[in-house]
Figure 1 (cartoon, rainbow, N blue to C red):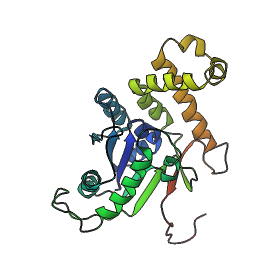
Figure 2: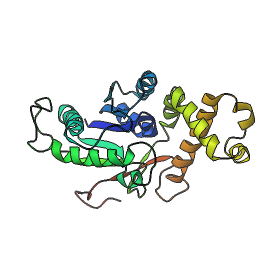
Figure 3: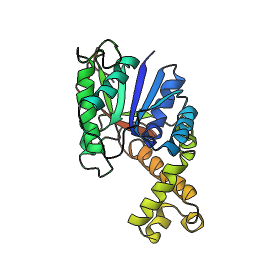
Figure 4: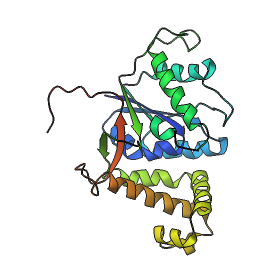
Length: 248
């Protein structure tokens, strides 16, 4: 059995990795999730989405938007989490992608994660981090990376991923409003053929847009590429793969 920690900067990221996470749950692995930035009104929706995927353990670390720094108190939160859960692997955002992302706090979060992961395996502030023994992370996977080096086949769990997406009402409404500011109605009609019908219902529009995005990404990483997968989520594993022998 594998213990997995999905360390999400925002709640939507749990669903973005939902096909992979659901596969692990169905295989009998333990999947935990923690969210750094999530508004109180969104948390019940994120929890419900996670449960649809089979994830029973969701924590909200209550980081304040734009009001924290990469210093000891915030590192302690991540170190305590890693030492307490003792995951075999962690999934989190891609630091390379974060450097070019204008979403709040992403660049700082990428630095926080890597520093906290290193400290979690050392004898550092043990009492202040809950008294848990140091835990070294052996495998770190970056989600939706700029340069993936592995993919996970999600054909069997893609529908479940979309069910989880549908309950993230606050995120879907925000996405629809944000995308309408960046793209013309003519363009959006091409992405979502029934855009004119959905335009007045931002939640429904957001769901249609995210569904289109998810399907496009899954096919790019699958049938439209050369991975050998049909529908896939892409990841970049940190470091060098160690194999018992060469794989076919």
